[in-house]
Image (tube, rainbow, N blue to C red; front, side):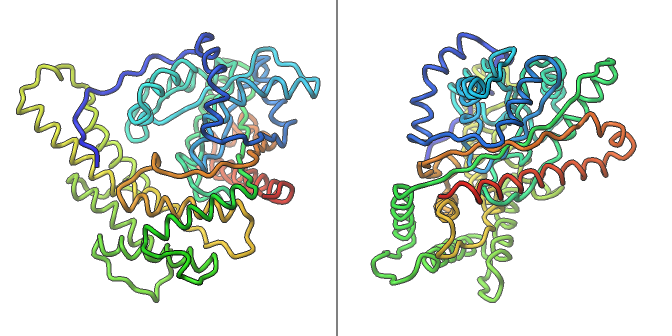
Length: 445
């Protein structure tokens, strides 16, 4: 386990689009994408929607919010490189020209600048990316986002799932933040007597695998079995039974940690929920805070408080602290790191509800589940998303859907905010569902 010492809070420069950094990113993009995805081929589906949205936005004829799915964790890096260095060439093949070189401004949680290291703090602001706090009022961050949308010209990219969701073929949850932002931007443009429409472009990302991926999956499953003390060669079980055996073993170990009596009569999902509720409650108890709000409000609060103990916000006299003061802060930072292990487990486990894939399930479904099973073990052992093992795909499919007209619904939103929000959330979820069905029907693997 690492030794954690307190540090002054990170400083992130004001977002801007630097041509020099884009040039550097272009040089680094190929080796970086190889590191993330190997030699995967990138395939674009629904290109007419993506081309048209970018063409109108870059020409100053509309304002676009790209609502991209975030099931894997690597989508922002993939899409940044794709928009900067691939989209223009693909559009040219369809005889479409853009008024400006394509780019998108990504919104990210402020904690990314903390755990992402110097590379995140350097590259992201210089690519125009905008940080935002999840758990406290951030008027400065919101003002940047609204300005970026209303002023343009680049689309603004937001993940409506709020964070990594770990499920490609299902949509566990959608937050309303991106939609609310769209309506607020549309209202600001309307107040300024601008006729520019605001739209949300749904974007879904999918991975497809070949025999190499299948072999890598088997190796990863064997690795999980060894962690659990189950030698694969001695089990004599089928693929699904091997997954269930490991899954149940890991759950039982967590039930022991949180002093939950195992009850095999309960479905796995219920036992899992009991476990991640206990994990989050343990983190709250260690921080000395009350459980207030829904699960994710509580989760974000714990995460925020832990990071604020490791990186001290608003501390101008950090170097002038006495040794005793510094040592106390170091102890609190170390405690926060261990507290956040419970939060990391609860965070992932909330999403680990997808059914165990059958023997004849699609390869990408099996691989995703095995990767998630590893993550379940990894979080149980005190890990985080940095310890996730991703198998290289053969293909990466980017699927765009028809844009949702936000400005056209603005009048309804002003009359009935909650009802209109629910309608747009449903439209967005349906768009994602259609993307999933189309890709699964037409792209094997």
